[in-house]
Each structure stands twice: as structure tokens, then as C-alpha cells.
Length: 282
Image (cartoon, rainbow, N blue to C red):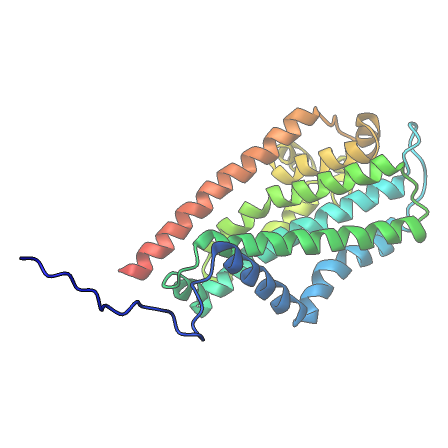
């Protein structure tokens, strides 16, 4: 005969207990942590936001002239230094920061927590979007108020969107650097990467003024296509050609280059992440 037990006490949570955090809660906590960490280091904000503005003030505001289609040279210079600032943000936020987190053991600690790895990277993306937008807004304000740059509202919005999306497409380059470079060497390698990319892509000087071997190499750099896409958005293909001294190519070509860059370095970063994870387990 089977005996039925009827006096089993129903288990209840303690009044002070809290259920496990949801993924959205972990994401919000990570994003908040990234923002607080950045705001606690004023040097980071100055380096990311102020440097492109200072460079534009020194070189962009001193330029003058209007291209045949009516595009102001100062507007194109604004786009150049904005692209430079977003490249710097991608390399250092996603590259050097990840390398430092690896060095400090934070990523190894994260693997033993319930937080998915993608939440960590989403926090980096969110921070990049915020500071990228802040950099663009400050630079646009300086260009408009101090430089007298005038663009139709739709041009301002299109330029803002192309710059922000283009900068994010380069983020996986930073991730790959962060996982493949040795943490102690990450900052040095980052400078060796983003400064030559900026010069060779025409962010500081028109491509026509660069040595011949750099002009021939530039079309194989993702930042070259980033710049061409931005300049053509601010003005026109004719304005971009007059400004850089080279044939700008088609919009689809530049967009595909940036998409390919995002995918290629994303796969490389994923390989580096898995290698780092496997080494930590062994």
C-alpha cells in the first residue's frame, strides 16, 4: 500500500532573497559600469573628444575656400577629423581596453559568472556609440559656430549617421587587436596601427600629396573607404575627388569594404577570444 505524504512544507524564498538577474539586467549593469569607468578617468574623455576638436581648430579652421559644387573645404576637413576621432575610439576602446581587461584578469573572472560574453562586448559598443556621438556633436558645433560650416539639415544627419556606422564597422579591428596583441604591447601597437591608417587614408593631408606608394596602397585600407564615403556624403563625389585628388569610387564599393572589414576582423577577434578562453582553461 502506498502512503501519501501530505505534510510536506512548501519551500519559499527568504524575504531578503532576490531572483537571479535577467540578461537585460546584466546588460544594463555592464553598460552602466562602462560609462562610470570612463567618466572617472577625465583623461579618457579629453583624449577621445578633445583631440579631434583641437586638430580641427588648428588645421580645419585655418583652411578656406569653396569647391566648384559649393562644398566648403572646412566641411570636408571637419569630416576628416571626425573620421580620425572615431577610428581612434574604435582602436583604443575596443583594442587597448580589452587588452587591459585581459591583463587584469577581468575577462577570466567574467567566464565563471553567469554573464554571457556578449554582454561585455555590448557594453563596449554602447560606450563607443555614446562617446562617438558626443565627439561628433562637439565637432559639428565647433565647425558650425567657429568655422561657419553650413550644411542642409539632411546633410548633417546623413554625415552623422555615416560617421557613426563607419566607426562601428571598424570596432572589430579593435577587438582583434585586443585579443591578439600582448596586453603590455597593446597601446604601442594601437598607435602603430591607427596613426599610419589615418595618414595613408587622407585624414590629415589630401591623398594627392602623399607619396606614390601610399596612394597606391590606400585603396586597400578600410579607413580609405571610410573617408571616401564620408567625404562623398558631406559634399558629392565630385567634391570628394577635388578634395582628395583621386577618383572616389562608388558608394556600394566603400560600404562593402567596411562590411567586409567588420566581418573579417570580427572572425579574427572571435578566434582570439576562443584561444584566450582555451588557454585559461588549460
